[in-house]
Length: 273
Image (spheres, rainbow, N blue to C red):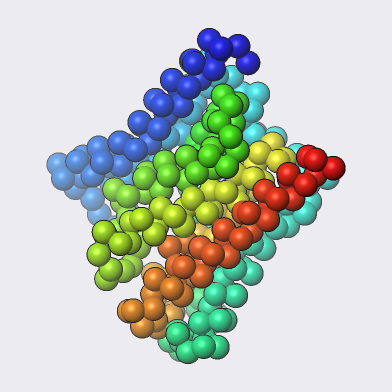
């Protein structure tokens, strides 16, 4: 890529990041005037829609194009990545919850597994459509754009994770249940999101498609969000940071980070083979 194009795309990346990091706060400001109810708010709509709309404008009108947008499924030869995307969060959640129960750090509250399964199934469709918008912003624009302007692969994952995590902060209260102070919770949350960004980003850049990330994100939201919000687990307050099956839990974070590092090592090994 020519130097002028690198500069242009770098500026576009900065614009995208600025929109992503500010739209939630603008949304919160809107909510103070317009209000919100159980179905959401105008501010939340802006928060969800602004990154994907910015991506559409930058690709469609500002000249970034669609070559690296990851729109195609690319199923041929990539079945293992799609299978991994479906199974990643079920296996991860089972490991974390199973370990927590075995060592006595958490307990199932007694609500039936059927009720939990119904909650997961009910969450799948809205989560899928929400994550199309989310993933085609982060993995459909930011990740390949950083890669294309020459940012080293690991640092592109870290940057995506920090912007992605920062985007969550204004509406963090919608999907986080914690009695912990934000001074310690936020850095851990950002670290957990960076770990996820490495896994999502490695698969996305390797096969050139956003759809495995959409699937992985959808399955993760549908499994983990009801598990936490529905109070199916009883966890001691002092152990929540360790065993919570959400991305901010230390065990979840460690396992996710290990998978991300493994994916990077396998890629480097194949590259040098």
